[in-house]
Length: 448
Image 1 (cartoon, rainbow, N blue to C red):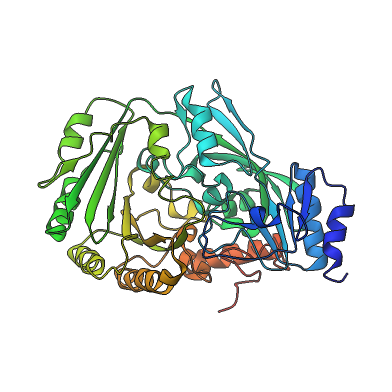
Image 2 (image 1 turned 90 degrees about the vertical axis):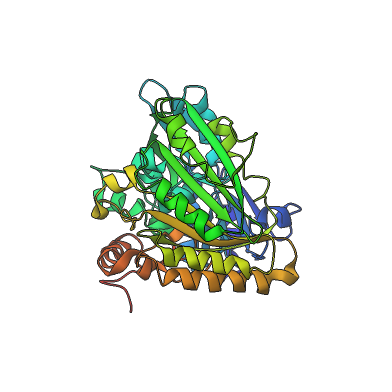
């Protein structure tokens, strides 16, 4: 089948959803992704509405050997939810969210956003731990692991994942859980989009309880000393407390989230009000409002880059690199972000899921958000230089979701897990249909 026939095949497949080709009036709008650095022109965007649609799309992509991109929220920094001259399977219309408050579970369509799940659970006081920007896609976030403000208390998003409906490379529809296809269930929890298209997730939900949120800003003068005080203040923090900070060339912003009970909240939060703090009077908000707090800053159409890594601890060398790097920042939108981990994340055995990094104390990201194309080289260059310095002080494994550069799978998972993932990839996707991701190459052990 010649490449131009692919659009015709999709049209003749009698899909419930629509096929948008380059002549369609909505093509330019629908081909956009979150990161404006990425500008690609797929042959067709298929707006799937059912799992049968997805199965037909995957089958046609396999037969034509065209690139297949799977898009949930379109947030991949590397632009992995789109492609040139291939097929985009757009799941955004498959966004149903159904909460069962008695069972404390939620069923989530493969195209739903984090905000959809947060809002659906809020009326019942229930949450599933996830990321920190509400217009992020549930699918992409979950398949990489999923970390955020509730990870220390409830674990990663994958730790609340009960089952998934998936379409594999040969068009089969499988229900996957700890008993049915357990190896595939293991791989889905951290292995990214390498093994198929998840059309439905089922997650466990948790009682959120009271939430106390604070935000302080600090001057960058004396930054290293402030970060050392922060590190010492959270050394024995309860798992109900999660902290994250952002450092730019202009300021340090520290956010603290205490959830689950009022007992201990006042004491834990007071320890984090470090010398020089300016407290934001608007920082005490609901959890749903917190989840939306960064949405406007990180809106669609800005230009982004991100590269991150795990820290075993925040030693003085790490603090020195952060302080030194932000002084050389060429633009105001560049930053080092750092989220405290531990707690429930580390309760799960490292080998229990494909995700690699259970023992990390922090996850850092060197990232930027800017608007002018002419600033691309300066912004990306600074982020990469900062990341390179921090990588030298970081753990060897990594989190595949926060990488704007591809080709990091082997180093992210480590040799042992990568070999197991490559063997499973050979079983479920031997011709690498699902290759637009942090790709695991099918094989006995994968190429070196």
